Image 1 (cartoon, rainbow, N blue to C red):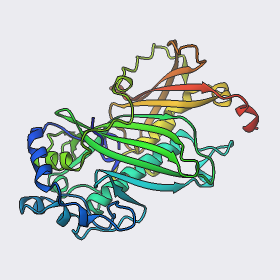
Image 2 (image 1 turned 60 degrees about the vertical axis):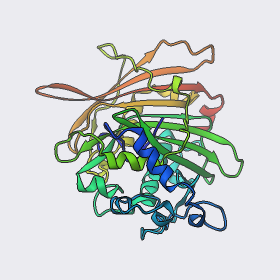
Image 3 (image 1 turned 90 degrees about the vertical axis):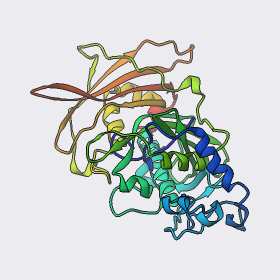
Image 4 (image 1 turned 120 degrees about the vertical axis):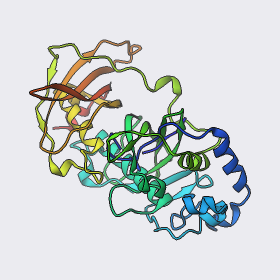
Length: 365
């Protein structure tokens, strides 16, 4: 599998993924060419790569045949928030949970966690390619060709939500995934207890910002991805448990949430509604009694199309009768759509899985 970084818009640095590409052999040859040139690029204290030195293979450096050791010495802006690890194929960052990131029960929400995943992905991109004057951090090849990564699917599975004041560590990495997609993975840990508290994965495609259409990934970019991805590939979630089809919602819908208006403040650095905003809208269709007595265990989101500031969005939902193996879990399907005189257009489809959490209702009052 492979993973990258934001929705049909962003780049989840969360910053998105791919389309078509050079054969694996090219990326493998690039990797082999630089094998063994890593030692002096590691920091003395931890053996991890410093964010101050980019692990990105710039187009110029690659064409000049520079090795990883030299790449890591390229003058790139430091990323104080985290550091590259696993020989530059992964990125680690720690975050202290703030008071405005939790709910009445002092636990973070899924929206907070999604924002943190997106932030860490963005910082990973900064560590690799440095900051840009507009949009998210992006490889120079992509900037020159007006390309960004856009998320098509995100899946987050939480075991336990961190609380106010907790220190969490998020690890992320990306890799190519087939001929036209890439993916970014995350693992979330509680630094104090050393517990693993969540995992996530996402799929991305490459878009041309001028045409807003899917684009092929340049062969040079695919070679870089192959070089910077873990070998062998790593999966944060089992392949059999991802990309499962999300069912349609029968009309009329069982639940109609409030109509949302996309605000200018909802826009991200790529000028589109942020990925996480859609998630918050979709959750407005969850019944109040579920919020009071259950905890959101997993969310799966398919991004279909995008909307702009000022447009109105309808949120619809329905309970799903799926076998939860006697666990008492509940599942809902959510649909966001934009309607105008020409018809209705699906923006997002999501599925949420909720597990019983006894005693939560008392904490909410």
